[in-house]
Image (cartoon, rainbow over the protein chains, first blue to last red):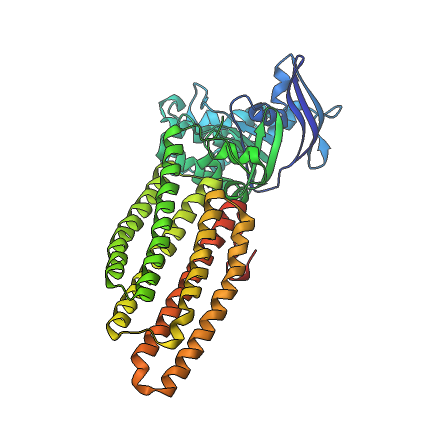
Length: 247
Length: 225
């Protein structure tokens, strides 16, 4: 994905200012920055999740395989299928584990039972849940642990075979072990998917991402490979933020 | 590039404490070199003993600095400049401790030479060499305090002069020993003293290289950067 001169406004307030960013395929890109810096707003702009906020306006181009996701005639639902999203708080539906994963497929009109079952299995495997849950597919998803629920949400996203997965602080409500499982999962998923993660944990950004973008007051201050950004950032503002000197 | 102070006052205090401890060690190193060279020039055994006593403190400091740095890495998980500082601290403390060891070696040879009476001829440039090595250490420590890359680079250049005198003293010692094989013990002591001072120059160079890494994030060792 690429963004070109992206501005995001909430009413008159500008939350994102002229952001140009190339998100590389099959890598993990982390967005970091203090609260209110615009990183989640920018993330949500990538799959038009902000469309649901009435006062929110997006200017500039967000390109997915070269076409502008905000272009005329582009179906936002198709954009969100190709650019899936996992939220901070896991949000399984009050349905069975199987139906949670199959949900997107049914919405998309997939009727063939075998095909659905195959896709559910593939997605649960992709989210490293199959071995744990294969004998409990009919149980309620609400009975799963927090970490399992979050991985189930990842499986649900995988079911519709997206190209890009956006994650908004996906582990902030999880304990360290569940967090480590998700982080390990990210390493596996990036073999096939492009992942963008917003995180408040700089250690997490350092651990899981290949590229890191630092946002401050709606601007992209620095973007580069994660190792360089955490060892010798080029911008003073980045250095001050990552070393805990403000924010 | 002056950064803001840390949001965590405790972390900021730990960083300052670590730097302070290193600088105190650096100051002690300088004093040890001065004592060791004076012990040599004045044939003063008492000063040589002072050097050895100071070295025990250096060893304790080295362990304390390492412990502080390990604790910082484990508990603060520093990144960016703070990470480079913690790494620099661990490297610099090793060089300082070794400079202390070289000063002790120098003091030991001074004691031995004191027992023989007068200093042999090739030793006459040792004071000058010691002054140059001590200046290198001074500049390396200043560059660390001021986080001044230009000053650190100057130290790298100063090492050439120390190496040149080392070569001269070494050649002088060899000639001295060749001329009088009964003076081999003293000749060896003098050439060893020159070697210790040359090593002090090298350790000061290492410190300066780490200052460049600390400030610019560039590794200039072994011709890099």
